[in-house]
Length: 497
Image (cartoon, rainbow, N blue to C red; front, top):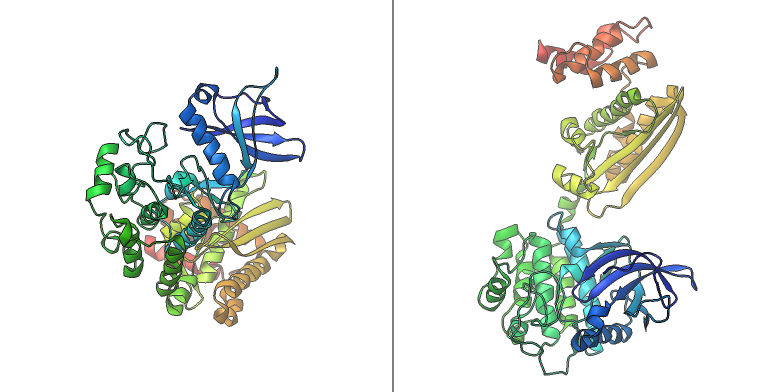
């Protein structure tokens, strides 16, 4: 049974349940002594009476306490709840991590090669530190790896860890399941266990290297290396089958495919012999399959402009937000050498909560511009941020607090800033990119509103034509002739005639 909020374990006060697994439950808790939040892993009373479970729980505490590395979760404390106001639960306290499991990350699809390399290098660095202290994890899998918001990989769950010098094996005649680890199973998780673990033989550092190969295979292909209809089928595949070649399955560079294949060799003698050797190999492969400068430049010179969010209380101002995004698309499209995703493609992400990196990958662009507009009377606040699709980090961001009369100047500044961030060589053309079809704000707003809503009821592609009609009907004088207010309207009018 889960512990309710407010339960005290030693000095720690339970806040909420974070998750549960075969070796107990993990809670978010508060340490009032240091005024910090921590993670508390609790072994329920029903399991505390099981000597094997208690031994594994204590083993995890000792294993993690013996290690100190940025890529291994840090342990702060151990104890047993006792007394009239506390439950009699053995517990261990670790740092509380702000991030997501690699399993959750992989749920969104395969990772770009640079990202997979980055995660693999950190994973192997943590493993090398553990192996140097004689600790073999024996249960590496995406569920036991956390990627924090700072992109730091943390290895969790050392409940099956053992000293590498041990030669005994446990529960060799038991079964396993695809996710999670239960007491009384072959030590490990189906699909990530090495062949020697499946057979119940002793595990050593090379067993962890096999698991790294399975994880790396999944990161770059989006598919598990070994997957059967049942745990028994999966274990059989580990023993007898070879996973589909990565080059054929996902277009992985041959050098990386060879590295993964070597990690997944059935015979431990044929794998990388140490985590340090594997790390060195991954670094070399990363250098060899890095994109060329020409490819990098081509990818970086592509952008998608998402619809700007309307932060105003008046929902009718959405047309202005959309109009601003459309004008930026038009302006950026005029720059030679810069590829811009179409409005139709970009605007379909208006109401989605899809990760910005995934949006960029789906649109095949190197950067994504998003922002918001808040309008109050004649005052205007525009925020814009340019996101690098490769890593999700900001390339540039800015906030503009202006009068409505400055809307064209804001467009100028945003376009120039984007060009400086992703295509500096085009900076000379940026000032010419934004064309002002009119200096009349009323005509501009009429155009934006009609382009968003449509005023004649005709099919969507005629909206600019309707916009031109609305703008032309304004009583305010318009720059030059009315037929030249919005050149795009003329093209659309011809297309819909």
